[in-house]
Length: 326
Ligand SMILES: [Zn+2]
Ligand SMILES: [Zn+2]
Image (cartoon, rainbow, N blue to C red; front, top):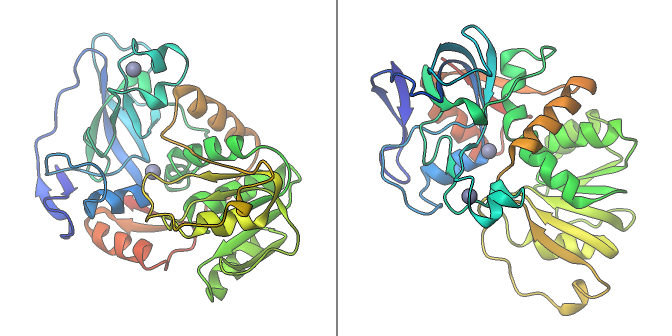
């Protein structure tokens, strides 16, 4: 089968022919129908995450069809449509796993990073970590729900109630803006300074206000989520939230956060990060996505054009999410 793989940090992905694996007892073999392109894939390709042996097949927003099931799998049958998310394996026994924080498991393994990913025609995954996907979404529309949607949703929950600022209006923010609007919340979108196209895109999704990340919102915010991997946005977001407000960093990697005056944190403002997801997050978000009609905006690329999709993501030239189709 064809797989687009990272062979060296900073180098383009290569189109490789690799063998299709047989699923082990608790695994399923999935024929990939669509795979979303996430900012994390760029960090992996650029070598910005803790080093792992190359080659790596990225991709953790997988929508596929079950082709074969292991002998111990009862949750899925051949022909089912499934989602394969970032969290691919946990130990089940560490203190985090036992406290319902399997997202923090010390021995967790991740799809498209320490496990094989979806930039390929087939993927083998542990069925216990796969999820059902709402029927109302096409394969390409459902793909970004798997990370931009559901890890974004974990950040959204951590942000708490009230008005919400979104720094970096990419795949995750464009979905979370819709979730927040459906809940009647005011949303403030912050884009790269001067990116009027992205601001127009955000307004088209119903946000209250859109501007550059160097601008102040028209009123203090109750909370903000930083999706862009830019450390300087943390003090900017702190300056935009009210007393008691919270700033949630939702990315896996960020440039250094510059020093900032204590008065930005004073007044019981807080900063936290969101790491990975739990299976409970996936179930909760998919239930919400089944009930609230989201409109995921996607740009579809053939699998072989994965490098082009990554380039457009890096340059901020996407509206919504890029999705690869084998
Ligand atoms: Zn992701
Ligand atoms: Zn664990």
